[in-house]
Length: 94
Image (cartoon, rainbow, N blue to C red; front, side, top):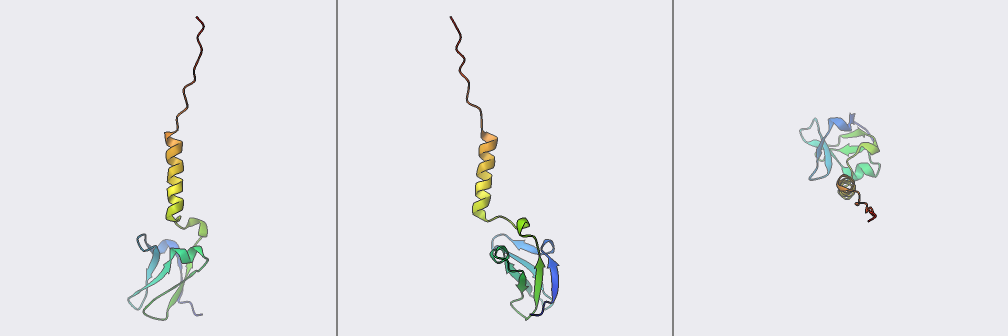
């Protein structure tokens, strides 16, 4: 497998709707790799119009979280921020 170049993921554009990273290809199209592919350990993005490929340099921990994990994180934050202590009843002698 011949790799045209190595590109840092920070230099690629992320399409949140399609869940793909892309980067301009010299042929005029763009290299693409899905977020799911990156999570599975794939690191080679391909151009659908030509035979060029790039290696994507990234840390798995820095990838965007899956939508279901983001929702769980948001729920935890909301509960934590909205948490209040229950009032403490104090008995007062007569």
